Image 1: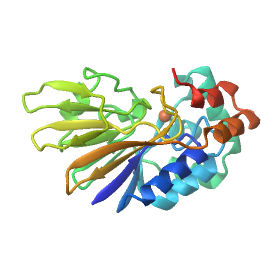
Image 2: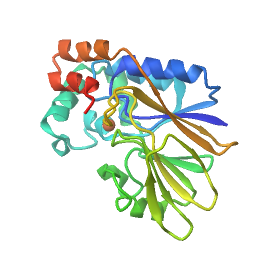
Image 3: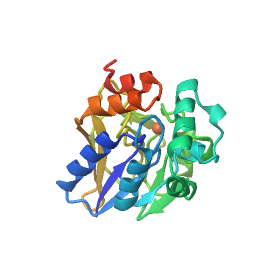
Length: 242
Ligand SMILES: [Fe+2]
C-alpha cells in the first residue's frame, strides 16, 4: 500500500493543489492528513473540501480545534491567534462541523497518526528533539508514528537498545527492530528555510518513507493572505528563506 501522508496545510490552497497534483504521479492508494488544515491562510473552506475529498483520515491539529473552541486560543501567539479569529469568522458551518469531528489519534494498518505527540495529544506539545520524543516512543506500540505540528520535516529513531537519535533526511527504510517518529513537515507553511511545500509517501510493502518538496505559486498565496486582511507577516513568512 502506498500512503500519501501530509500535514499543516494552513488554508494555503496553492500549496495544497501543488501537493495533490504531485501525488497524482506517485501511484497513491490512500491519503492521510495529520491536521492543521486551517489557520494562517486565506482559503480555509476550500482546503477543507479538498482534504475531505481525498483523505481517508484527518486527525486534529491545534489550529483546527482552536477554530471550533476545542483548544483555547490563549495558547497561541498574537498573530496565529488573530488568524484563528479570522478563520472562525469566515469559515462556514459545514467547515466547522468537519473540524469539530476530528479526533486526535488514529491507528491504521500498523502505524499511528497524531498531530503533535502521543503523550497528552490534546495539549499539542512540540517534538523538537529526542528528549521531547521519549514519552511518545514509550507509548508507541507499533514501530512507526507520523506527526506534523513543528512544520519541520525530519525523522526521530529509537533503536532496540533504546538509544534515540535524529535524522534530517528525506528517505528512510523502516527496520522492524527500530521505532520511528516521522515529522512530515508542512504543506502550506514550511519553517525550515525552504518555502517549497512538503509531502510524504509511505510505502508499507517496500517499508520506505520519502519526504518530498514541490514549488508552488507562493506569491498568490501570500497576496491572498494580505488582501484578506490577515496579518501581513503571515503572508511574508511564506517566502522567508532564513
Ligand atoms: Fe501547524
